[in-house]
Picture 1 (cartoon, rainbow, N blue to C red):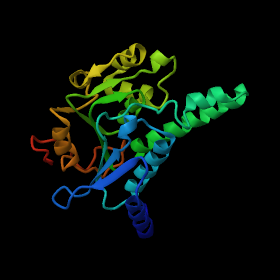
Picture 2: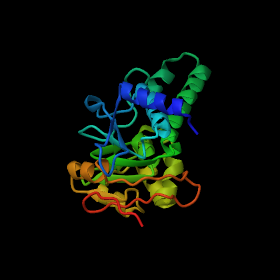
Picture 3: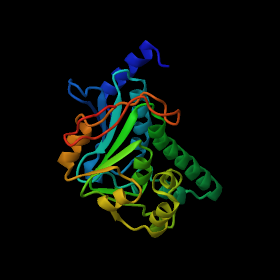
Picture 4: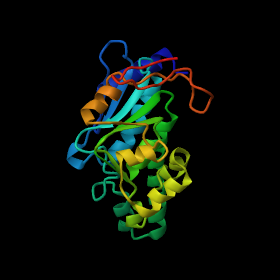
Length: 257
Protein backbone atom coordinates (compact mmCIF):
# COMPACT_ATOMS: atom_id res chain seq x y z
CA UNK A 1 0.00 0.00 0.00
CA UNK A 2 1.32 3.44 -0.91
CA UNK A 3 2.34 5.72 1.95
CA UNK A 4 0.99 9.24 2.41
CA UNK A 5 4.18 10.68 0.96
CA UNK A 6 3.93 8.45 -2.11
CA UNK A 7 0.32 9.51 -2.65
CA UNK A 8 1.18 13.21 -2.37
CA UNK A 9 4.00 12.68 -4.88
CA UNK A 10 1.58 10.89 -7.24
CA UNK A 11 -0.89 13.78 -7.14
CA UNK A 12 1.91 16.29 -7.77
CA UNK A 13 3.26 14.34 -10.74
CA UNK A 14 -0.23 14.01 -12.23
CA UNK A 15 -0.60 17.79 -12.09
CA UNK A 16 2.79 18.24 -13.79
CA UNK A 17 1.34 17.00 -17.07
CA UNK A 18 2.29 14.71 -19.93
CA UNK A 19 3.35 15.13 -23.54
CA UNK A 20 0.91 12.72 -25.22
CA UNK A 21 -1.81 12.46 -22.57
CA UNK A 22 -4.19 14.91 -20.92
CA UNK A 23 -5.38 13.89 -17.47
CA UNK A 24 -8.36 15.66 -15.93
CA UNK A 25 -10.57 15.07 -12.92
CA UNK A 26 -14.33 15.27 -12.81
CA UNK A 27 -15.73 18.43 -11.30
CA UNK A 28 -16.62 18.25 -7.59
CA UNK A 29 -19.95 16.61 -7.02
CA UNK A 30 -21.52 13.21 -6.45
CA UNK A 31 -19.23 11.57 -9.02
CA UNK A 32 -15.90 13.16 -8.08
CA UNK A 33 -12.99 10.78 -8.11
CA UNK A 34 -13.35 9.86 -11.80
CA UNK A 35 -10.23 10.74 -13.78
CA UNK A 36 -10.08 10.94 -17.57
CA UNK A 37 -6.87 9.89 -19.31
CA UNK A 38 -7.14 11.25 -22.86
CA UNK A 39 -4.73 10.33 -25.64
CA UNK A 40 -3.98 13.73 -27.15
CA UNK A 41 -2.25 13.42 -30.52
CA UNK A 42 -5.07 14.42 -32.89
CA UNK A 43 -2.73 15.41 -35.75
CA UNK A 44 -1.40 11.83 -35.72
CA UNK A 45 -4.88 10.29 -35.31
CA UNK A 46 -3.78 9.52 -31.75
CA UNK A 47 -1.27 6.93 -32.93
CA UNK A 48 0.85 5.55 -30.10
CA UNK A 49 4.42 6.85 -30.21
CA UNK A 50 7.30 5.63 -28.02
CA UNK A 51 6.58 8.58 -25.71
CA UNK A 52 2.93 7.49 -25.41
CA UNK A 53 3.99 3.94 -24.58
CA UNK A 54 6.21 5.36 -21.84
CA UNK A 55 3.56 7.72 -20.46
CA UNK A 56 0.62 5.30 -20.32
CA UNK A 57 2.10 3.02 -17.62
CA UNK A 58 3.38 6.03 -15.68
CA UNK A 59 -0.08 7.61 -15.68
CA UNK A 60 -1.77 4.36 -14.66
CA UNK A 61 0.72 3.81 -11.85
CA UNK A 62 0.19 7.32 -10.52
CA UNK A 63 -3.59 6.97 -10.63
CA UNK A 64 -3.30 3.60 -8.94
CA UNK A 65 -1.55 5.31 -6.02
CA UNK A 66 -3.65 8.50 -5.97
CA UNK A 67 -6.18 8.33 -3.10
CA UNK A 68 -8.49 10.75 -4.90
CA UNK A 69 -8.84 8.44 -7.93
CA UNK A 70 -11.74 6.00 -7.73
CA UNK A 71 -12.12 5.20 -11.43
CA UNK A 72 -10.36 5.99 -14.71
CA UNK A 73 -11.87 6.68 -18.15
CA UNK A 74 -9.49 6.07 -21.05
CA UNK A 75 -10.49 8.23 -24.02
CA UNK A 76 -8.94 10.09 -26.94
CA UNK A 77 -9.12 13.43 -28.72
CA UNK A 78 -11.12 13.64 -31.95
CA UNK A 79 -11.33 12.52 -34.72
CA UNK A 80 -10.42 8.88 -33.92
CA UNK A 81 -9.74 6.89 -30.79
CA UNK A 82 -6.35 5.65 -31.98
CA UNK A 83 -4.58 4.63 -35.18
CA UNK A 84 -2.37 1.99 -33.58
CA UNK A 85 1.40 2.11 -33.29
CA UNK A 86 2.92 5.14 -35.00
CA UNK A 87 4.85 3.80 -38.00
CA UNK A 88 7.45 5.77 -39.90
CA UNK A 89 8.26 8.13 -37.05
CA UNK A 90 11.09 8.14 -34.51
CA UNK A 91 11.17 4.87 -32.61
CA UNK A 92 9.10 2.94 -35.16
CA UNK A 93 9.88 -0.67 -34.16
CA UNK A 94 9.70 -2.05 -37.70
CA UNK A 95 12.01 0.62 -39.14
CA UNK A 96 14.44 0.28 -36.24
CA UNK A 97 14.67 -3.48 -36.75
CA UNK A 98 15.27 -3.24 -40.50
CA UNK A 99 17.89 -0.50 -40.11
CA UNK A 100 20.34 -2.72 -38.23
CA UNK A 101 23.03 -4.53 -40.19
CA UNK A 102 23.23 -7.21 -37.50
CA UNK A 103 20.15 -9.48 -37.74
CA UNK A 104 20.70 -10.89 -34.26
CA UNK A 105 20.93 -7.42 -32.70
CA UNK A 106 17.91 -6.31 -34.74
CA UNK A 107 15.82 -9.25 -33.55
CA UNK A 108 16.81 -8.71 -29.92
CA UNK A 109 16.11 -4.99 -30.16
CA UNK A 110 12.65 -5.66 -31.63
CA UNK A 111 11.93 -8.23 -28.92
CA UNK A 112 12.77 -5.71 -26.21
CA UNK A 113 10.63 -3.03 -27.85
CA UNK A 114 7.66 -5.40 -28.01
CA UNK A 115 8.12 -6.40 -24.38
CA UNK A 116 8.14 -2.72 -23.34
CA UNK A 117 4.96 -2.04 -25.33
CA UNK A 118 3.28 -5.13 -23.87
CA UNK A 119 4.17 -3.94 -20.37
CA UNK A 120 2.73 -0.49 -21.11
CA UNK A 121 -0.70 -1.93 -21.95
CA UNK A 122 -0.59 -4.51 -19.17
CA UNK A 123 -0.24 -1.57 -16.76
CA UNK A 124 -3.85 -0.69 -17.63
CA UNK A 125 -5.01 -4.19 -16.75
CA UNK A 126 -3.06 -4.19 -13.48
CA UNK A 127 -4.42 -0.87 -12.26
CA UNK A 128 -6.38 -1.37 -9.03
CA UNK A 129 -8.91 1.29 -10.08
CA UNK A 130 -11.76 0.58 -12.46
CA UNK A 131 -10.68 1.46 -16.03
CA UNK A 132 -13.37 2.21 -18.63
CA UNK A 133 -12.52 2.61 -22.33
CA UNK A 134 -14.57 5.30 -24.10
CA UNK A 135 -14.05 4.67 -27.82
CA UNK A 136 -15.09 6.87 -30.72
CA UNK A 137 -14.18 6.77 -34.40
CA UNK A 138 -11.62 4.25 -35.59
CA UNK A 139 -9.94 1.84 -33.20
CA UNK A 140 -7.15 0.19 -35.19
CA UNK A 141 -4.57 -2.53 -34.55
CA UNK A 142 -2.99 -2.07 -31.15
CA UNK A 143 -6.01 -0.18 -29.89
CA UNK A 144 -7.65 -3.59 -29.79
CA UNK A 145 -4.90 -4.47 -27.33
CA UNK A 146 -5.46 -1.16 -25.54
CA UNK A 147 -9.22 -1.47 -25.03
CA UNK A 148 -9.04 -5.20 -24.26
CA UNK A 149 -6.88 -4.33 -21.24
CA UNK A 150 -9.68 -2.17 -19.79
CA UNK A 151 -12.34 -3.48 -17.42
CA UNK A 152 -15.32 -2.06 -19.32
CA UNK A 153 -15.57 -0.86 -22.92
CA UNK A 154 -18.15 1.65 -24.19
CA UNK A 155 -18.23 3.42 -27.54
CA UNK A 156 -20.12 5.85 -29.73
CA UNK A 157 -22.15 4.62 -32.69
CA UNK A 158 -19.50 5.81 -35.18
CA UNK A 159 -16.82 3.60 -33.62
CA UNK A 160 -15.22 0.78 -35.58
CA UNK A 161 -12.73 -1.89 -34.59
CA UNK A 162 -10.13 -3.73 -36.66
CA UNK A 163 -6.99 -5.80 -36.16
CA UNK A 164 -4.94 -5.03 -39.29
CA UNK A 165 -1.74 -6.85 -38.38
CA UNK A 166 -2.62 -9.80 -40.63
CA UNK A 167 -2.55 -7.46 -43.65
CA UNK A 168 1.00 -6.43 -42.70
CA UNK A 169 2.14 -10.04 -42.19
CA UNK A 170 2.78 -9.44 -38.49
CA UNK A 171 1.14 -10.68 -35.30
CA UNK A 172 -1.09 -8.71 -32.93
CA UNK A 173 1.39 -9.33 -30.14
CA UNK A 174 0.57 -6.66 -27.55
CA UNK A 175 -2.10 -8.66 -25.75
CA UNK A 176 -5.19 -8.75 -27.96
CA UNK A 177 -4.76 -12.43 -28.85
CA UNK A 178 -4.57 -13.31 -25.16
CA UNK A 179 -7.35 -11.03 -23.89
CA UNK A 180 -9.93 -11.03 -26.67
CA UNK A 181 -10.80 -14.77 -26.47
CA UNK A 182 -11.80 -14.25 -22.83
CA UNK A 183 -14.02 -11.33 -23.85
CA UNK A 184 -15.61 -12.39 -27.17
CA UNK A 185 -14.77 -16.11 -27.33
CA UNK A 186 -12.12 -17.94 -29.35
CA UNK A 187 -14.07 -18.05 -32.61
CA UNK A 188 -14.79 -14.32 -32.72
CA UNK A 189 -11.22 -13.47 -31.70
CA UNK A 190 -9.82 -15.72 -34.44
CA UNK A 191 -12.19 -14.13 -36.97
CA UNK A 192 -10.96 -10.64 -36.11
CA UNK A 193 -7.27 -11.58 -36.04
CA UNK A 194 -7.18 -13.74 -39.17
CA UNK A 195 -9.44 -11.75 -41.51
CA UNK A 196 -8.54 -8.18 -40.54
CA UNK A 197 -12.14 -7.19 -41.18
CA UNK A 198 -13.57 -4.01 -39.69
CA UNK A 199 -16.57 -4.33 -37.40
CA UNK A 200 -19.04 -1.63 -36.43
CA UNK A 201 -19.96 -0.55 -32.94
CA UNK A 202 -23.20 -2.53 -32.97
CA UNK A 203 -21.45 -5.64 -34.29
CA UNK A 204 -18.84 -5.28 -31.55
CA UNK A 205 -21.65 -5.24 -29.02
CA UNK A 206 -23.21 -8.33 -30.56
CA UNK A 207 -19.92 -10.22 -30.47
CA UNK A 208 -20.14 -11.21 -26.84
CA UNK A 209 -19.75 -7.75 -25.28
CA UNK A 210 -16.53 -6.50 -26.85
CA UNK A 211 -18.31 -3.28 -25.90
CA UNK A 212 -21.05 -3.22 -23.28
CA UNK A 213 -22.88 -0.09 -24.36
CA UNK A 214 -23.13 1.98 -27.56
CA UNK A 215 -23.97 5.70 -27.33
CA UNK A 216 -25.48 7.69 -30.19
CA UNK A 217 -22.64 10.22 -30.39
CA UNK A 218 -19.33 11.12 -28.83
CA UNK A 219 -21.10 13.83 -26.85
CA UNK A 220 -23.48 11.23 -25.41
CA UNK A 221 -20.52 8.94 -24.75
CA UNK A 222 -18.72 11.68 -22.81
CA UNK A 223 -21.84 12.53 -20.85
CA UNK A 224 -22.66 8.93 -20.07
CA UNK A 225 -19.17 7.71 -19.24
CA UNK A 226 -16.65 10.49 -18.67
CA UNK A 227 -18.80 12.90 -16.69
CA UNK A 228 -20.08 10.79 -13.87
CA UNK A 229 -21.24 7.58 -15.54
CA UNK A 230 -18.83 5.26 -13.77
CA UNK A 231 -18.98 3.50 -10.43
CA UNK A 232 -16.02 2.63 -8.26
CA UNK A 233 -14.27 -0.65 -7.71
CA UNK A 234 -12.31 -1.42 -4.58
CA UNK A 235 -11.57 -5.11 -5.04
CA UNK A 236 -8.50 -6.34 -6.87
CA UNK A 237 -9.19 -7.71 -10.33
CA UNK A 238 -9.55 -11.45 -10.14
CA UNK A 239 -9.80 -11.39 -6.36
CA UNK A 240 -13.51 -12.15 -6.12
CA UNK A 241 -16.68 -10.11 -6.64
CA UNK A 242 -15.91 -6.36 -6.57
CA UNK A 243 -17.24 -4.47 -3.59
CA UNK A 244 -18.19 -1.53 -5.84
CA UNK A 245 -20.99 -1.73 -8.38
CA UNK A 246 -21.05 -0.43 -11.94
CA UNK A 247 -24.17 0.30 -13.94
CA UNK A 248 -24.91 2.86 -16.65
CA UNK A 249 -28.23 4.67 -16.35
CA UNK A 250 -29.96 6.61 -19.11
CA UNK A 251 -28.58 9.85 -17.71
CA UNK A 252 -25.13 8.45 -16.95
CA UNK A 253 -26.01 7.84 -13.31
CA UNK A 254 -24.55 5.15 -11.14
CA UNK A 255 -26.88 2.65 -9.50
CA UNK A 256 -25.69 0.54 -6.62
CA UNK A 257 -27.44 -2.53 -5.20
